[in-house]
Image (cartoon, rainbow, N blue to C red; front, side, top):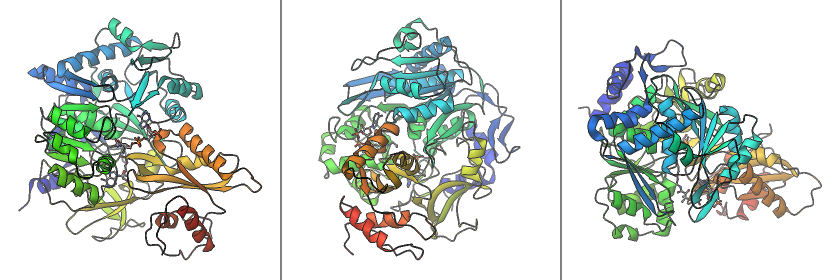
Length: 634
Ligand code: COA
Ligand code: AMP
């Protein structure tokens, strides 16, 4: 006998048009689509062509017009400013419409780009929704990125307007944002015409006359703007994510497919209905924030929580339980690293007992591999199902999950369970041959991808095809390696490129190497992600210095650490580097990254047959031991 998951999965692959066409009926369309799946320009598949809609209308006005205007749409909970503020759907709609009016007053029209560089305050979500309302394409940049990274994104997206705030609050630190914004604009060739700044009381930003506009003053003068009807295929946003070089990839998401898939996912994957209270503890600068702080819960008519705080230290490791209990959260979504941080401070979960968390039903984890320890600790202490699921910035929503609204499969630790309906996940070898169950290979998805996934890379169709579609023709390359077992459970083992995951944040070691290589004393370098108990992985740099350099190693190390912080940002958490005589390489000159990583992480390793000089690995091991890695003496 099949269950609901199996029925849905089979139907979604056999008849994608029927499956997603039905899901789309749950949304509002000014004009219905002509075609559910348009494959006339392969490999660029488009969903709901001919359809006319508006994502902001579906997220806000739709609910107000159906008599749900007084329900709570968003709760801003900020332990760092001691604030709790609730917005009804009507309030959020009206505030968004007014800010959309502010954007219009600055000449922003459909298709213009708006970069949003904001901390976790309601105005960040309002700015996103306001762009969606008038068809402007937003690009949110995470606050932990440095001015140079922001500049790269400004150069690529060429925004007409930037929206920012005077500061963010990181635990107990106030981080001024405006100086970073000013520097980024100075660094970039594309100059935005206007910057709209939300002044926060903890730090007042100085304004540049003629360019900078105060959010509140402009809002007081603005007229509310109506939703603009948009083609389903018009871009909703660009979200930059780490690529294999310093040049990030601008993932483009459409309006129609995104709206349909996300709304569908709230019930099917997360078992969350309208009126339920939902909390994704992430940041609007990441894809989880786009999809599950802002769009999906509002499209579904839930109450979403926007949390400005950390799992620990704001004020303590009980803050998650306080938020769950105070707002009666039914389901929560965060990265495993957040639970590792709590577990480290409160290993017995003693603080949980101070709160009534009985409304809490399911914990969802993603963004990095969920280690069994963290899952079990959460299961034992929270007494709810803990669901690992796998996705990427590019996919916008989950590729594999235990779809809690369809069927709850037994959990296998280490696996995010099965391919979600819409996803035909397969494992291939390098020659594109299918692997047998249990055999590790490249995790790929047979085209077409379901709605809500990336359309292309911003103005780089060629890079989109080259990065994702060319290596395995007919498939999307996830760049994750793994296997599928006899029962269809997917296992995600490692990235096949140089991307690492630091505290759930995606970073490119290649981009860090570019920074290190620019140091005048560095002849050669490598950056690797090594295991870290809290953050999952952290980057470690290996430097080979130019002949004749006599300055102390510590000085050079401090300089490269600072350079990564300045050019990429504090979020890179690049704090450790080592000076080595040489890097272990193959005879053809390739750095033996995999072997070095295994040595650092105390994993079993074999001497590669192709190694140029075996002594380089012993040297590397000794060097790693000086900073607390490669502890295993064998
Ligand atoms: N703006 C400015 N700076 C930021 C920032 C932001 N939005 N977010 C992080 N930073 C800075 C931090 O202040 C820190 O700086 P420091 O080196 O001066 O201390 C650095 O970037 C690293 O931050 P973070 O990775 O958050 O590490 P942490 O040690 O401060 O906290 C955790 C560790 C586990 C508590 C934290 O990473 C966390 O809450 N993670 C949740 C994961 C998450 O939300 N993932 C998103 C995908 S689901
Ligand atoms: P991001 O684009 O930041 O969401 O990062 C995507 C990458 O994070 C994936 O390609 C995986 O390598 C990793 N990842 C995300 N979720 C999981 C998971 N549940 N298990 C293992 N790896 C994951």
